Image 1 (cartoon, helix red, strand yellow):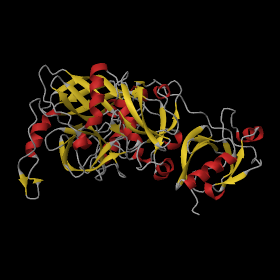
Image 2 (tube, rainbow, N blue to C red):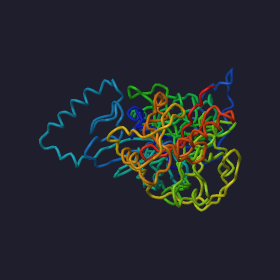
Image 3 (cartoon, rainbow, N blue to C red):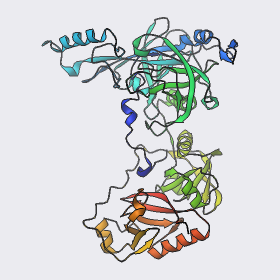
Length: 514
């Protein structure tokens, strides 16, 4: 697991209210029978378009199931908190349904009933989707479909209802694994290779939108690698197939009948599908499902670094030819990274032989690494590549909290200063430390006036510059010297490591053109 510094973490996402994939809405997802998966549909119309999805649907539909839950809750009976969610006791109706007003009036009469049981004893029923991945009865669904459920039930394609046992769940990837005992082998589907899926590939989604029953929709993969700010492992497939409330936990199939995604969320301003749905890639789900089945929980590898994305300015300031990699902003004490001598300012280029293009690549690779494994990490340090062996450990149950915010200055400090890069700098003397609330453990040069350079927020008054070009500084003259050297080296930007109210990060500042 990797800790992203606060300055790089996404803010509270506005999509949360509109990202709903039928939270607990019925979605019937089908799993391919345990027989060998048949090749892609042969019947193609001109232009290489499928003439029909019927053959594929016939094969996979029996493995898609409805997931129903019963929970004791003082609030809404439905887990779906998106727009248009049904009130307690009401069926999950589509917005604008002719029955919507009728059920609302009926519910209002129940609410006025003086003999009604106290709210804390209400039992809410909710619906979602899932799919069978093993003939023995293992069912994959979303964690948010079964979260806080007192009872979980599965309804098969033929109408058979079975009680389900929760094997394990993982909130960080929103995946849960259930187990049912049908007394016989069940049809099952296989998790495919989502990495082989290309933008533009045909897909079908099967689920139970709005509680209508098994429904099939088709579309294409619209995009890959989407980050919707729902968690640290966001790497969603974006789909344009109609996905609505109730499809949560249902499968997305490729044309060979393999599951390449688990439908999880939609972007919607009105609660219905607008052609922007998101599915968890099967390759992200595979190790999670395997661990849940084996251990009932997920353990993740831990490297112990805070990282940020390499920008063009940062790459240029470090002499990197490509804008790729994960920049180490901080190393946690006693972590695997610290033991391997990784340092602030290193850029991680590969991890265990896999190239790291973005910080998401590193986060996923580290999390998927078995604890106790020794891996090689290739880094860029001071203008050259180095390879360092790292022993990956299990992520701590609780990550150490970031340092608290330093108190704001009681009055603007007025120390003797020098002007560098368009802002005024000063040594960190005792008075400046008191005025800015900077502890004795912070060593560097303080920005006493960001001037016009602070308009874009890269550098702010009160920031402490710790390093320039990966070299520590203790006086304004040190900063000026490093900047002059960067200009002589032909850099277009210079990399600063700063401390802002206790949080450390790197900032690339463009150099003035002469």
